[in-house]
Amino acid sequence: MDVRIVDITLRAAEQLAGKAIKVNQKIHLARLLDSIGIYQLEAGIPALGPDARKSMLKVAEAGLKCKVSSWNRLDLNDIRTSMGCGMNIIHISVPSSDMQISSKLNKTKGWILEYLKKCIYECKVEGFDVTVGLEDASRAERDFLYALIDCAIAEGVGRIRYTDTAGLLFRTQTYEELHAIREKFDVQLEISAHNELGMAVANSVAAVKAGAAYASCTAGGIGPGAGYCSLSEFIRAAVVFLGACSEFDLEQVKEVQKEFISLIKH
Amino acid sequence: MPVDAVKRKTVMIDRTLPEIRNTLLKMSRLDILDLCWMLINVGADMIEADVELLEKMGRLPEGLAFILRADSIPELEACGRFRINRCIIQRSLLEQPGVPELIKKEGLCAVLEVRANSIGSIRHLEGMKALKNFEAVSCIRVIGLGRVDTSEWLETMDYIKGVLEKEIDICPDNRFSMGNAIALEAAANGMEFVTTSFSGFGYGRSFASLELVLPAMKLQRPGVRKVNPDVLPLLYEQFTKCSHIKIVRNTPVISSDSYSERVIQYPGDGIAASELVDA
Picture 1 (tube, rainbow over the protein chains, first blue to last red):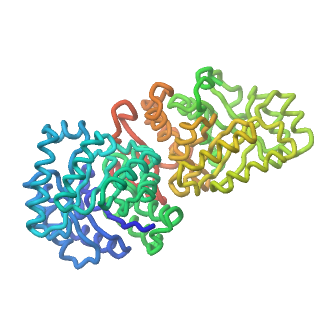
Picture 2: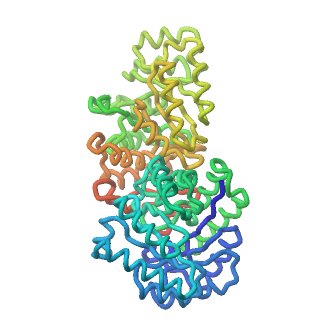
Picture 3: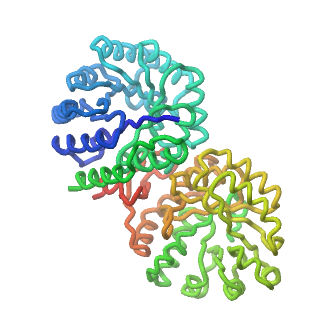
């Protein structure tokens, strides 16, 4: 079983209230994360402003081995801004549950599908690789979730990120949800598990068993709320339960995590 | 044991106290009692303790249910003194002469603690039936389960439960971050007892976390279990006072009917991740 790590530490750090990482620190951290062997680094959210974009551009120009991506709302302006940041991948996060749709977009589901098409199309025309995130997928109506996946695939998206935004899934449910998508669609899957109930690692492992080929993690499990799947804990579990991630040096990963924590604290 | 605790399908046992005591830190009588009340108020049904802790508490207050960890015959005899009817024992004690008679005389429910790390080792528990004095045991506490990565373990455990004809107490460790998932699966699938600790704290190891498993159980079976998140900040402070361990608070995103104020995130690999938020 193989799994690629999508490290979203830099983006998650931007979402922590009152914590800002300086540009040089961000580049340093990006290099550290790259050195441990992650597949992709989510460098930030361009819509946060010029500083965020500047730092992302610097990260993109740092000569990293890993792919570098940006996180974007379902908003053409955000996405256009993102295109100037030198990213390999543009990630578009789509609210998929009724709760998120009403609080974030207040639009119809039909509108969301049409708008998603436009957003993906624009990225593709400019030559970007696109991934689509299903925000709050665990609380979404399944028909709509599948319609979003269908739409993304039709527009040429090769990878879907399933996000358990509220951290409500149990591992059996995670397995069933991901397995059902895997059975129905020919698309690569990524799991982004939140840790509200302390099950982000267990859910990520279950998702990989169900066919997800990518897992989102953060250093030390940081992130808004109770955080995301911890990078080191996932790697340790993946080695034992999935026979994967053996190429990572766990001690090195822990050192990177520690350095990150220390950077953020000071 | 409080009446509503027995009516529930799964009784939640908390083992935070003996784990703190294992660190050899000194706790006052009042500290111990406060911690017990807070653990019960947040949603635990029963507190695990040892003789030293109980002696420090003196007369045990009404309304707190205890399970005594007994490592010797004198400790087993102490159950009567403390009016406790549930005890945890190891195989070495169970097989000593006179122990079944003592269990019977004191009217004790004896919980035999055994380790199983994988589904394969759960299957081997079948052999316990041949243990000397096994008939004196009422319940089996299975600790470990660290290498159980799918819910398939439940089928094996159901089979073993049938063979052994005993109640089951699941106390998973969290070495590979599966503890909470296993505890929850145990509760959802009819295991009589689940044992956790606050913040997953364990002396030299870690367990499933009481404060995370409880809301998950509440989400899983709404209305069955009372969970009181308002006590969490106080419990956190008390735990820190007793254990000298700082667990940093984080803000949850979970639905409003669960822990809407705070979730305490325990650190991974010695890194208090959420220090970032509170520092």
